[in-house]
Length: 446
Image: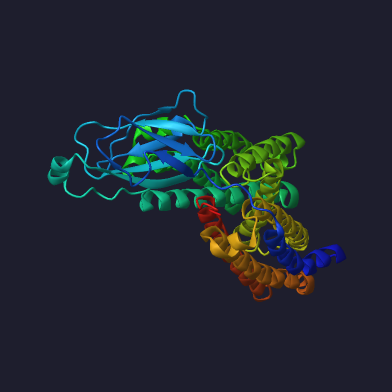
């Protein structure tokens, strides 16, 4: 291990502290779309059901992204309020068959990151005693289905994992181990990562449609859910992921067909780089990086964050599943030191970009300690610290035991401690990915 690598390793605890300091000292960023007021006001007593309900949000909204439901699940028409700011929409209310009190559920999709906020409004109709007797108490409106939300989190976790395995695996083969293009385990890993990425994009599209419309898991399979979600920016971002996974199939097919020769080809590497950047950007569009006063810096930091994580995680998977089982002395001597340096640089990029993203999204000490998003961010930071401890064990083995393993021609007993360390590192990284998937669907809510 070089002196530069050791300096990066020794500086990681400082960078983690710097990350938390940056969160505490930064200024707050914008939250998601929230309802500011309604006309009539929530809880008002009305002589009769008004013809329309006016909703005012704290930022511009598209009427297609605002949904208002009755307790029976009926969608009410939403339109732009003529002559009013783009923050205002009007809702046509039913004039017959309405329950008393009139209870409604609203939801709004953020135009920038696709996250949904929702709430309830209730009005008492004083002249509708007969309707109250007939309908009884109004059903309690619900927000997005927990099952749909959990399904969306699972789809995103699968997508992030597939992205990391595919992008990191391609980089590992192209830069560190071209001969791996002919290794069956490496080829299977890349193929499974590609398939999981494409399927997760398709699943996320339907689930996002059901989530936006406050529907159920069954609604995620309806063609209408796919059609509706494609009318907004979040749906188009997910569709872009799917199309990029289709393009990635061309890159993967070329590698599988040409083997090591293709892995060393400049033309193939340029194509792989283009697809990689596209995938990273498409997945970054689902996060909170666009929020805040510097969305451009947030987008760049998110790209670096995803790239660093992909190089690290994809490389770990290649080591555990493809390189270490072979125990080839020449490969161990060549690949492990290279990956150790790459991993150190990747971790530094992850922490530095994470500092920028935390400054963008959380923005204050209070938000870090008193919001669900802040708690999840602290959890992610804690698990990442454990990952770094495991990674330190791996790098220590490379520095002190690699030469002996090569001398003993990949002796299983000598290599086994490194395999255990890398496996622990990989398992903890999967936990980090799971927390990240929940963070993406969580409102910073300051």
